[in-house]
Length: 531
Image (tube, rainbow, N blue to C red; front, side):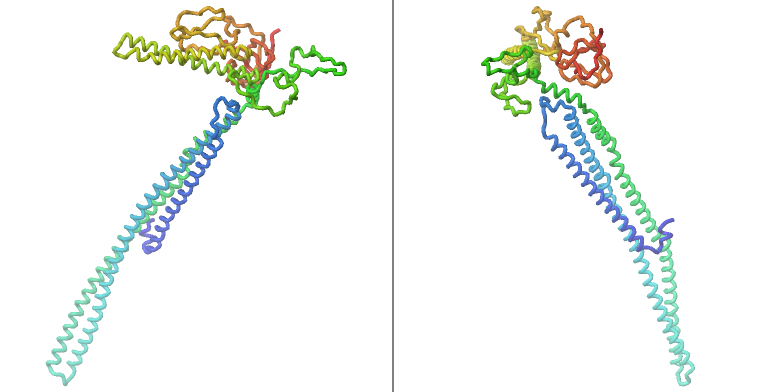
């Protein structure tokens, strides 16, 4: 069924409907634009929110950065920022694929509709013009026929009048004949105009207007299909990014599951454990006898009280929750408790070792370059490298001095089972690093492999070629990442060999079947010792 056949007489309804359809497209485009603005504002607010709570660009040295709960929160902020990016992508695709595309298509439809309506108006005007010609010829025919009838009646009356002359009768007959001839011509013209009008009317109602109406129907159906496609795109645009949004949400879920309260507790212990012993009992001083009491034998070398423990004035009381003045920061970290001091000294040594290795590599590279220049003068002047070689040598000497200084401080601070022991290092005249064996002899006179680490060797027990025999087994109750130097990672349920028992510091040394050794928290495992 088509409009040209069924709606041949509904021009006004078709015109109104097609106009209403175009207005619907405009309304939908406006709706999508407002949705796009909402998405853009939503994305902007999400980015601002993520930025607001992620303004503090914490360095890795800050204590909270090692907590899984803190890191998971940062992961959530990053995922929300990515989620905001997907909302922006939705807004952009809605604007490009719907708003801009439909607006352009709408303009084309308007021009096409306007052309069809103009064609219909021209056809209507042509038909109306033909009808006016028909009506004019009809009225002329009617008028001339009446005149011819009156002329015929007058001629007959004159012919019957006995008083009329022969000339009068002849004249009246000629007049009647002329009027009849004119009337016949008007009749023929009217018939021709009528035939022409009927033909054009038939053409108008059966050919021209049906074709225009069918074209308008096709235009409207194309508009509806395009609009339906825009409806689908409204959904598909968001469906397209849903997998990525799903990954963002999965990332947030993963951030939550990555939180490990046990690990966080161990990190807090590791970061804040002072290494001090608890205060011993305060001795009774009997002033009534004027005797200064000596230290109690039961304290076993434990500080007499909290004042000796913290190095404070003895006249002050020691309370766990009292406000303490901020200590003066010293280069050797003596202001820190023993445990924290050892860790900071180890970290500092690692930094110095890395800087030292860079300078050694730089020195070796400059030496090789100098040899090349000396053998091939056309490639460069060896003297031009003198300043760089001199500066590198000075840097190596400076770092070597700092290395010795911090190694001395670390030796004074003492070591623990889970911490690293450092070997002494020296440099030869070429700036190459020499590593001494424990007995003071050189292990080899050849140049060491640059990839060999110049720092962070494990405890002396780790250096023994023969592995220590296990004293038992342990089973992991929790996951442990083993991120700190000297530690080893483990998974819940994993069975490890116990190499060294906990010496009271909360750490147990274990070994895997592949020979990897390291320290784990004693509270994370159940230990079964061999009898």
